[in-house]
Image (cartoon, rainbow, N blue to C red; front, side, top):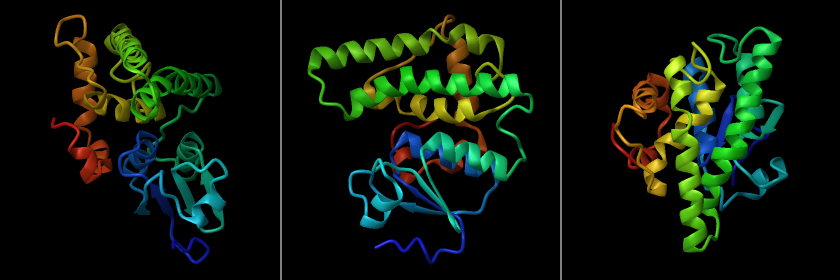
Length: 212
C-alpha cells in the first residue's frame, strides 16, 4: 500500500508508459525539481490513490498537504510553484493561447491516440483514427517551420504535451515521412527528443519504444 499522508517530500504517482504522466515528468526535469516518482499502473491503482483521484486516473501529485490530479493542473501548479525556467508566458494573452493550444492537442491528438491504443476499436475504425491522427500531425508542419517550438520561441507546456505523443507514434504504426514537407516536424522531434529534460523523463519501458 502507498502511504500518502506520511510523505514529507513531493511525490508523483506515475504510470511508466502513460503519455499524460510523462508530460508531468518532463516538467519536473525542466524545473530541476527533486521529487519521488512512484511507478504505478493506471489499470491497477491502490485504494489510497483511488481516494485521491476521483476519476481513477494518473498522474497524481502529493506535495505535503496538497494532492492534485489531472496532468494539466499538475503542470501549471509546478510551473507556478517553481517559476524558473518559466513554461508559461508572462503575459495573460500569451498564457491563454498556450492553454488553448493544450486544449486542442488534448481534444484532437490525445483523444485519437487514446482511442487507438486503449480503445476497443474494430480494424476499420482503428485504421481511420490512425489516418486522422497522422493527418493532424503532418498538418502542423507549417507551424514548426515558423517557430523552434509549438507556436513559441521557447519550450513550453504545449511541447510537454506534444513530445510524449510524437515519441509514441511507433506504437500506433505512424511514421512521419522524411521529405521536405515534413522536415520541420522531423527537426522538431530531433530537437525535443535530444533535450536533456525529455531524455531524463523517459522510463525504461518508454526507452524501448524507439531509439533516437
